[in-house]
Image (cartoon, rainbow, N blue to C red; front, side, top):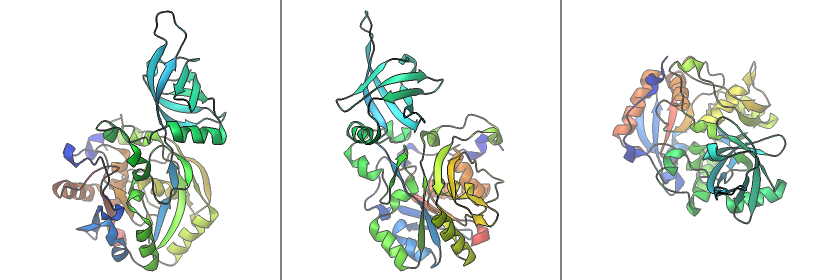
Length: 352
């Protein structure tokens, strides 16, 4: 299985740089039973069945992008320079691993200042990241980051425009509760309070889990043989109550439908003999064609980048030929792609 198998042509003007409003007005490609229907997210209460269960990722995106200055003692005036960081993950000692621009200009001991609220020092520089210890910790760090940071928009949006105040709300789900993600679970961005209430009134249940989406979700696959790719790890948790709810739905004959690839990867990581089990830790599960799904019956997800691990995941669920057909339809019908784009509801034939 080659990386090129997951490539497709995408016109640049289909890449969404802003979401639609209201959120459920986004278009929804519904693929089920070999039929593709053009709907809207607001139609979900009509499309789903009473007894189905949506699995929602309640992670909260932190304003992880920081723009400031690197300060270093020097005689030639080279000690002050612009620096841009994106927080990746906290280290056990309270420091943070970060992506940095320009990484090669950073050295251990460099002072980093992000306005009056936030500052720190470079502890180490790795091959593709740096480690920074911030002067603020705990609640003080959270408050300083909220003041100094920007929402970490995906590279394909950031290349077209800078993050602004609108992204503080747009790039956050309405059920975000547990801070720690540096990228949004974007399929969940289509829900608002009214849609959630309509789904509950229809008899469609919901379960929350947590997977803190990392910046690695945007890293390109660099190997031609897909099976040799190594996934980045992300921290997640499925509570005992969440596992019990999912298992009860399966026992009653309802469908388990994760909203987003992050929720799907998490519940598949927590699945074992007898269903889903309480689970907490890091997962680097890599789902590509040939994977046998254990608890997922369908998936709501946005449209993904060519040659990405997320394209491989949807191909594993729907089959290569069907995914090619779905994406060809999406391009021809001018669906909006990627994080701020439209959505799809993918139901494989075995669950039609």
